[in-house]
Amino acid sequence: MKPAAIYLISDSIGETGEQVVHSILSQYSLEVENIKKYTHILTKNMLDAVLISISQERNVVVFYTLVQEELRQHLTDFAEKQNFLLVDILGNGLAAIAQATSLKPLGEPGIIRKMDREYFNRIEAIEFSVRYDDGKDPRGILKADLVILGVSRTSKTPLSMYLANKNIRIANVPLFPESEPPKEIYQISPTKVIGLTNTPEKLNSIRKERLKTLGLPQNASYAEMNRILEELEYADKIMKRIGCLVIDVSNNAIEETANLIFDYMKKTNTALINKNES
Image (cartoon, rainbow, N blue to C red; front, side):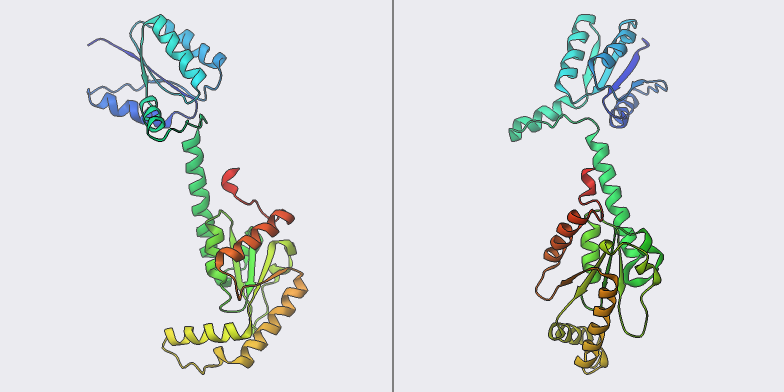
């Protein structure tokens, strides 16, 4: 069996290419423990330094995952001159999609890893918002990108989940007269707090439906107008004390309220909007 020098050249961390190479080698019962891997190759000078090493080998197979056309062509030209085997791991796939869609590839190194990072950031934001939903743990207030306040049935939780899917970590806190809000709410900037309110009539209707769903009497104090007015007055005092933005959600879909919050956060730099772009 002729020994072969296996090289892998990547413009990112080389993880994708390495998995492919090992999968190919496994079909021949070959285990090349010391695949010569060169990662983050982003310029011609960096590539040339690798090619000097390759040119000193006799029996070489070079796998690569390069998305910059200039580097791909430079490597191809060198392989033809030196007469070594070259395997473009991404090439056929890029060409096929380009032909089918008439689109050009972005040519951005490491984009798969960037997408993975975005995914895990979003999952972390969702898990955070679930952990600190409905005032479960006031410690989340100090860690959150944004804190949402409001009486019951002002869409705090669905709005929190929507914002979490945009990579924004949310803590939401219910307000009701029998309990003072956590002291942490006064320890953060008012620009990081959003108050939600609704009309008494809408809350009355929503809460009656909630009681009906739970199989409870609709005349329970939870849905009584006097109780709702008391809660709204209390919440209003708290929000004024904080000095936070207050949004009336009575005629808003979740997306509309979220867009108002995005606009506000951009103005105040409260948190990174579209953190997945960073």
